[in-house]
Image (cartoon, rainbow, N blue to C red; front, side, top):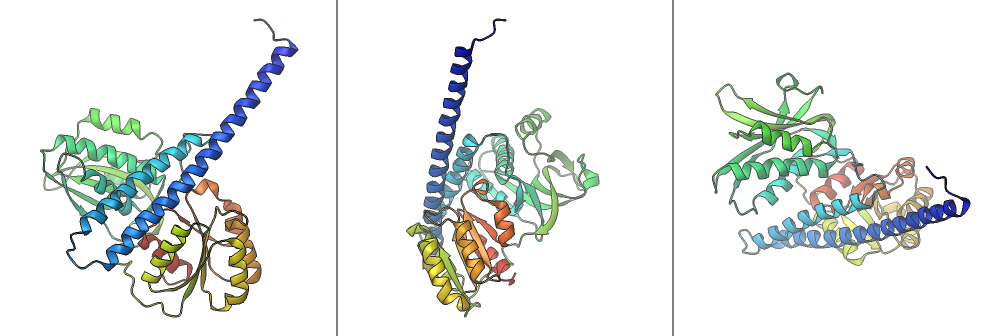
Amino acid sequence: TRLMDGGEERIVREEKIASGIFDEALMLIARSITHELNNALMGIGGRAELIRGDLEKDSPFERHLKGIEDYVDRSSILVLQLRRCWRQDPGLSETEPADINDIVKRCIRILERTDRGIKIDFAPGSDLMTVCADPFAILKVLLAVSLDIACLVPRGSCVRIETAYLDPKSISGGADQYVGVFFQGVCLQERVIDEIREGAGETKGIVFQALLSDQGVESFVVAFPSRQGFFQTEEMVSFHQSHRGKTLLVVDDEDMVREVGAGMIKRLGYDVLTVGSGREAVEVFELEHDRLDLVLVDVMMEGMDGIETAERLRSIDPEVPLVLSSGYRDGVDTRAMKRLGCRLLQKPFSMDELGVCIREALGEA
């Protein structure tokens, strides 16, 4: 093998540097695009929720709002895929506590829009422990299973899906506790199961298994290892005008996100102030902090960003609850966030997700 001379080595080094600069530029562009897309989806989905709250029962516009929310869900998945493209390690998954019922609902909304005319009867389990995994990977797995089932059952069939705890002794996994997603009365061939399992390789610890009930009814279950911590069910997350006297400050440099966020907060029963920059937030907080019960701060803002803003607010009032909002977790300084005692709310968020976060931060949950 011929050794390179000094000139050739210099050329190789320069090419590597140029390639690294190009990759870094692409990463910055992709970050900017995903940030803008998440803000747009936040505005679209949030306005749809606010409009729904003003509709009369059985309004003909309800189905159009549902369609808008479906498109927001599908677009959110595309944004997640785009984020994977600019990661240094494309196989890296964002592990976080995930609400399995919420992910199943997103899956159902997509499944019901296929040309198979499938109807879904969903029975969500209550008080389920969290599943610690990448929510996008879970959704991808459940969609793969659901679409295979949709192709197997007759057109127009009704498929029953349940979520519940699963006896770890009944499956082949090694975790102490599982949350299972059950597809009742469905039989998948082992070949199909193997293909789904292979495609889910990045989601460690999940189990795919056929089960037979005592009544002889066959089901297919996807089981996810669970952990301590609970998500509230829809029945538990019912908000009323019971927060009078609580005032929140929303800090975001995007007009549409600020307006939608304020609208959601008012609908949840809180009073709200809004500002468009970190500098304004500090000025308002210095004057009004005695009557502000919580501050919601966007992470990516021009000038003073969310972390710096949170630090300034903490220096004025060390006890005020702070929530940071961001379109992606890997754009957040988690060490600074923990040091400041901030919660993280991921965009685009729904009114229910916002309400749960606020209630937990205020100690009302």
